[in-house]
Image 1 (cartoon, rainbow, N blue to C red):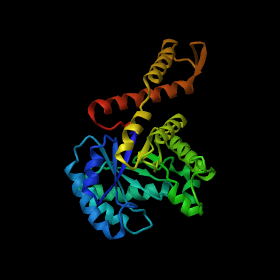
Image 2: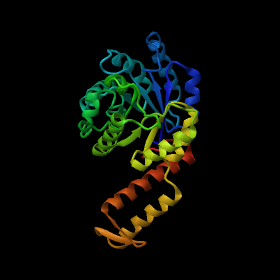
Image 3: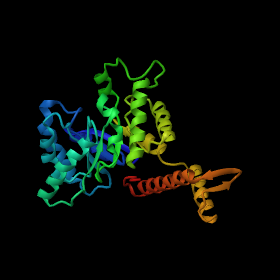
Image 4: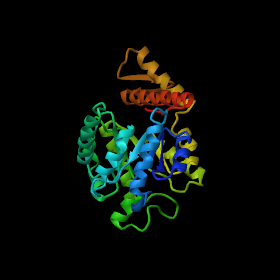
Length: 300
């Protein structure tokens, strides 16, 4: 996945646009974008919409209400029958929350005759101070874990911050730390690191800059709040032809030398971490190429 687009679960019009956006994954939202009075209607609309498009190429995740609300079970009961690809879990405080949700999903899958473990989980891990500090707990949280992502707005409310960015538009230290924790936690858990949303959907250049910085640092995807952001995100997280060519040359150099610890290439020395990085980039490039040609998700 390169792009994950949030779409309110109570709007058929926005759901239609979301599925036509070219996003690798659509996140059908039952949480923040849906008013309390509309929760039940959103569950029904979302379930019907997902069920009717079950065989579409786009991956479908559903953001449920968090485990502390008492609404999660009703969300799951309403939408699991439509067989989404995964659940986005907001306000996850640790890997234990992922394991808790996994148990719920296992029971529901068994009750519906679905394959065990078929529904993945992507938690948002930085929406509380406890969540940020527990980033390392997602290692070993289970096979359902497909990625980790972060958010700044709920964290700002939790810590009492007046803003998440400074006058120059850069995240302040608390939120930079949360971002770094997410990246490191994803690496430790060996799952995708997914960058948070960029809220000014009209500023494509600023979005592009943020995407390129995220990709540079090791994120492989970014969430979106508007269909117009999807092409920018997909382009930024698709490895360039030059980067792919260099990665292939590194892999070939190691293979030609019998896979030693270090090889020389173009006057520079490359060791095993460079090889692993090259292999990951090639995998991402192939997934992106398949997505671009087939209209399906980039899964790497």
